[in-house]
Amino acid sequence: MRRKTGFRKGAGFFARTAALTAVLLWGLFPPFSAEAAGRLQDPGEKLVVVIDPGHGGENLGTTENGHEEKSMTLTTALAMYQELSLYDGVEVYLTRSGDEDLTLEQRAAFAESVDADFLFSIHYNASVSHDLFGSEVWVSAFAPYNGYGFQFGNEILQDLRKKGLFLRGVKTRLGEKGTDYYGIIRCSVSRDIPAVIIEHCHVDEPGDAAFCDSEEKLREFGRMDATAVARYFGLKSSFLGVDYSDYPLAQAQDGLTVPVAVCDTTAPTECLIQLEDVDYSTGEMSVSVSASDPDSPLLYYAYSLDGGTTFEPREAWPGADALSGDTGGASFTLELTIPSGERPVLVVRAYNQYDRYAESNVWESSSVFWYREDEETEDVLAPAIGSESREEGEKGETQDASLAPGENPEPEGDGSAGNGGRLPAILAFCLAVLFALFVLLLLLGWMGRIRSMGRRQRRKEPGEKTNQRR
Image (tube, rainbow, N blue to C red):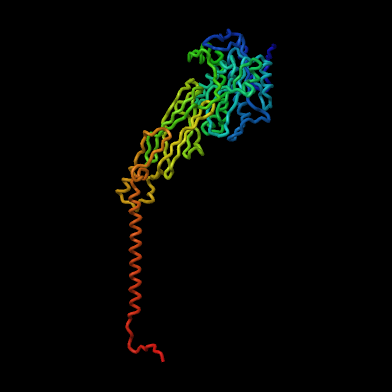
């Protein structure tokens, strides 16, 4: 096939100059060795890379949180183009350099027209729930493209983790017809071109949004992508003074014979919670959470205090590592502070790499949590309860931490375990008030009778006439 030697219009003067310089410098240095460091892909004597800024034209992409994905991807792709063009022996193309609306077929066809060795599709993410966070790379489900995608995805995700982003992993997905789900990957693979989708972060989640809220941060993503491509292909740059010819990829680092991305369509096999400790006088509660998934790593958890009606935003599963390949069981201790006045009904969800979840058993508190949330605020019952009773009440009691998963603890004795001994004091206060009211009513009654008798027994004054009947 005839190779296209020009560059797409509108890529920028600097980008064109850098690319031409790289091509000239390539002639002065020998080609890199594609077989070094356990690389699965051999691009041949000359490397051609296509960068695809996602969306464009009327296809805006995500617009959550005031962003416009089509503009973000173009900014990142242009920076990636400029940086990658500084490496020796590589031709770099853009599927679009302006606000153009291209179909997925057109993008893949362009990559085919320039004899591309790889297509990198640039994207930013968002979720319906707005609580997903992290970076991920989507690859083909089929060999050898799956292995190619895995090795590259491992490189870029390691950089994104160093940047501070949470990793959602190298992933693949099948459509209803058993082919690759994502069109840009499917259309490229059908033309024998490896392709990946880089989802840098979630623009609608506060933590992730801080990584993409300026033009410079978007360009930084592009330069990072270019460096990962250079490491993947073992490139070197006399301009930058770097050489990745012997850089070890995932296969050499981890001892994997065939590194691949796994497609998981099932939820975790189980999720269990068990009470470890609870203090009703402070609201502090410790719960053991365990879950397992034989197919993909556990990444998130979320909990509900109302029996599963509503859930708090997802949090990272402690120790989660989407690149480790560890799919065994995992557990951690969940520390909670229950608001005063609530009687929690706890449920936990464990999410795997593909956002499928398993829901735990239910733990229901036997008592309402009553305590002072603000030390400077007087308790409502404080004036009526002696200092001795207050001290005893604030000690609280602890439920049995040896309960089986799902077993609800029963109140002990007179049921004061959750009230810290305040119930007798409250009853005494109420009886004292009733007794005082009773005494007051008696006094009022006696005083009324005395006044009435005084009026009847009053003596007649001298000269007073009697009212006699004539």
